[in-house]
Image (cartoon, rainbow, N blue to C red; front, top):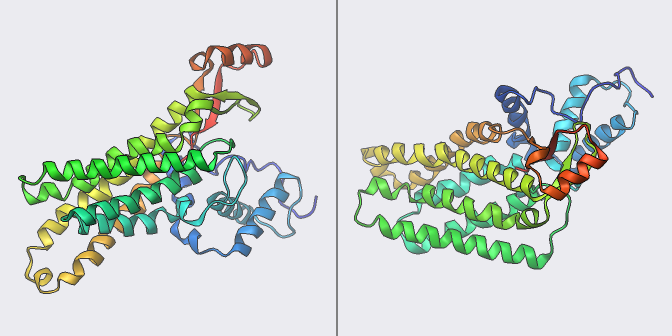
Length: 322
């Protein structure tokens, strides 16, 4: 060992208490920090070296605890927790705010025509598909055919949902039409996320004991994980897609906005971004990242296997994904 930093800092877990909502919120404000998108490959690789070296008992000379945690969060923002692979840039949680504020702002701005609805719903669901795949739980590979089938099914379902809802609001007040994108996104999340993670539902996700020892794979755990992610994603969309329409409906009646209609999209995107900066980490924090369930809730064959290999284990843990 080199350096003065002790080796008993548990960087396998987040810095803050994950049993509380505030602890999880602090954690996800760091994880979803949009500034992490701008970090160079060298910074990411340096953070990876610091974290992996520390786990092996090697400390960089002069490294402080704050620097270690900073490296840990940079590492977590770019590398998958189960596979260790560098994640696609647009699929990282740190890209959620800049990507979603642009896409959502455009969905809320260009909602009046069918081609615009189709295009922006397709863009949004294509982005969501990348995010869902990038942040999937577990380390099992997914084939190109499986990925393609999931993407086509999810995107088609989302576009059909959006068009169906749009047709229902033709004779309703204009303000109602502004909420069509939110309703479509909420419904589409219920389609997209399970489709993109269907392999987990079929074969299960890894479950471990409290010390992290792998005990098997559970489809029941996957169901709980995916349900929690769906709720979190819909929650993220509520402020960003419910508050700006009300504000914009009022602003568009003002003489200033009528004089400069070109400001409509930038103002809407800005309002969405402001909402997402807070909604994204707070909704990620609704459920612990390291989720848990009772052994008695697992599949009978897995219960039996755990009783034989780890008889004292009553609760298993798993990465729910994001």
